[in-house]
Image (cartoon, rainbow, N blue to C red; front, side, top):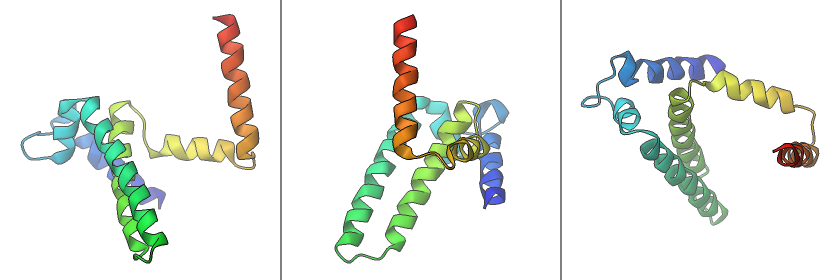
Length: 121
């Protein structure tokens, strides 16, 4: 699975305008050329479509609808990652870091870190 994501990340990287990507012929290049507002808007749209697909599945729709929409969400998220000099390996590293940590505990730790930073600032 990581190989597939790495290959897709490499394609996205190659489509960056700075790497010769052509906004006239490449959807990825076009989004990156337009800037963050364009691909961030797409991420919001795709996230909403994931929610709607899940709701549809709750009412009898085919589960493959969720997979299709999550694939779109991941794809557009990978464009954002590439724009900011990140890739799927960075996300996997973060997930590994969280492994074995309760979500409740992790959220509490983030709150403490935010509070500490606010007190310093």
